[in-house]
Image (cartoon, rainbow, N blue to C red; front, side, top):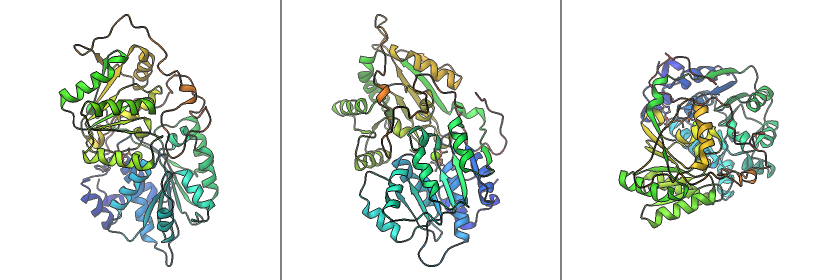
Length: 438
Ligand code: ADP
Ligand code: MG
């Protein structure tokens, strides 16, 4: 199967070939023809399998066939939960459309509106946006959504988790009723199905069922260690292993700052990225990390969704997430596009329940060991690892999480029964085996 045979024109095929893609991924093979037919889509595939091109390429194909005269109205709208993801999708769109006469831009909160307004004024075919800034600019009369033909909700489950459901509905109310809708989600929860039921019309269900073999692309291991020894241990591991690019997850923003400062003090270049940082700082940290100027990026779960850092070899859970699904998304930052990766979790006695929840979700027992000199003190008793969880969630994207119950009623520590995705390969062709489901 080739990109051309999926119905994409030479200008687009050439652009993806220049990106180094030799053949479509499974989700791309399934999604692209359906989108080209004009169908609504409800799609799910594990992270890192090329969903962005799965919706972007056919959108480019459709839009490039019907260019309009005069000032361009926005014809495709892509909503994402976080600013970083929005920026990344725009980057992909720019690359894929390099040989086309189409314009695109991105808008999100936390930065000056004026450059965004100017870009919009020039006339934009494809707009990528986070919901808050989009509605703000619509209210100011800066942009109109009345000519949107195609709507994409990327990481829709995350948007619901972050409390964006009302904003999404407000946006949808501003769109023409006749349009094409594409909904991408890592899980098909009850809330997602409900949303899909409300605004998709006869959607085609697209699920990638990746071969099991690539699960092993990410090696996962647990190191047991006392809470107070986590910082010296992670510093030692990074130094001894000579790790050059490490993404480290903490549960809280404060914890991310603290760890990043300690890293810096020990001579490891580091930056923290989370919802309390200014957008300028977030962008700079991520860019520095991608370029290799920053060795360690310490993040809350904001960075766990959607972000694509090519060839990231190491992900460390300094603390386990209290929501088991987030583990899958965190470690999915490594081993992308078929590369190898290692995911290491530092687990103290307080986190045993989280670990059990994760193992239940991924249906796998994780190998666990101790490091010489950092052995666990068996006399230390477990404490509540996340006493503030009722009023705090460590993510925070375009806007703050609203309400205490933004995880759709899942306020306990119990892992949600969501389908965890095993790793997929870009070379598995159409020949897929059935996948484990929970
Ligand atoms: P997802 O949205 O499914 O998590 P992305 O769209 O971010 O995944 O893509 C993950 C990575 O795979 C990106 O680096 C992207 O450039 C790369 N990629 C996408 N499609 C292909 C392909 N057909 N062949 C090789 N690499 C690809
Ligand atoms: Mg994605």
